[in-house]
Image (cartoon, rainbow, N blue to C red; front, top):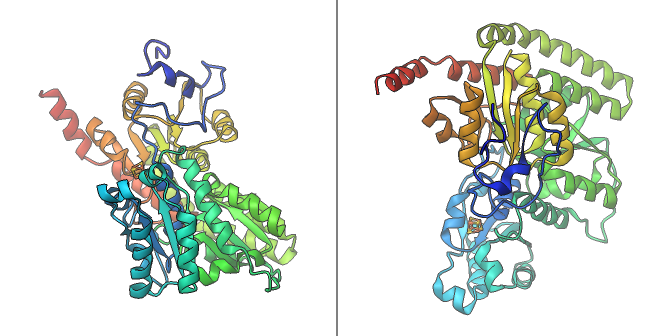
Length: 454
Ligand code: SF4
């Protein structure tokens, strides 16, 4: 592969793309996107919205033009065991007149209406690009509304242009930090439970992990933010350990909780058999309790015995296939490399929207020589590397799906829209099954035939 012969569409992108074994340079990552390169990344507001949206009984009010709200309407396949309020998308629908004269009065009216209609205990108000430009004082409007209605109204400072998607994660974590801060008069007590950070209960994934942890003899205090609610989140400072699945979105909150409440944290991943087993063991180790360790080993042994024959069956059918991966965060990319190895597939291209340097270093140690590693990619780059590396499959989200289908390549959705869980031992089987059904689908034969007849 001629890596340096015009491989990148824009010269400014060259430090964000490397080939393992060929380039020694460190990958440039965790920076703003190059203007004009049509990044696959979502904006700051979208980053904040996806983190907070699974809080089921909150009103999520988007202060901005209607397009921002529709872009993220019901964006995650997060499931709820209670309220369904979060599945609505409310917007102040800012128009030209509001942009000229300011949107604060309209925002205050919208909050009044929503409180009257929905009677929420919690309202998040998201700032969008135009609000940042016209300078509406979200803080002041939210403060006045909170006082008037005696509920929590929290501004989320997420104007789309103030950085990249990772800035949206931080804005969401700042809002959560405000939400969980105890009232001065209330004395918090610590219990032997875990806060589970960075699981959004897509297709009920948080429930699967909660069940494992319960079998280990440990309680989940609250999940951030899948299937969580106002009351549950308020108890977050009581936990004795934070575990983080989606590190990109939640490491910042975990650090804040360590500083403010002295809750230690560990990173985990429940994607694939190897990482799920290792993560459960690390949680047990953190509690340093013989009975928890015994239960954990029993759980891992039983679950692996259940799923191993099925995974082996798929491995035989998939061995030798090649995968391209483009996902949101680094933790998921790292686990996917290991998970693909479990089913006999080599990863030939891998990238993320918000991966950090330490995560790319780990990716670099895991992949084989010749693998293309890239940060904050655009469609041109993804298509080019998939073709050059002969990928049979792309793993990504809603924005990557059409790229794969246009090229006649199989696709697996590992993002918001999927309807089946991919976490834990159960998820490992679902993943292998989905990879098999798409890679081995007879449809690709017809795509090839169609190409040849052109
Ligand atoms: S906040 Fe800005 S970048 Fe994000 S959806 Fe709205 S207009 Fe687009």
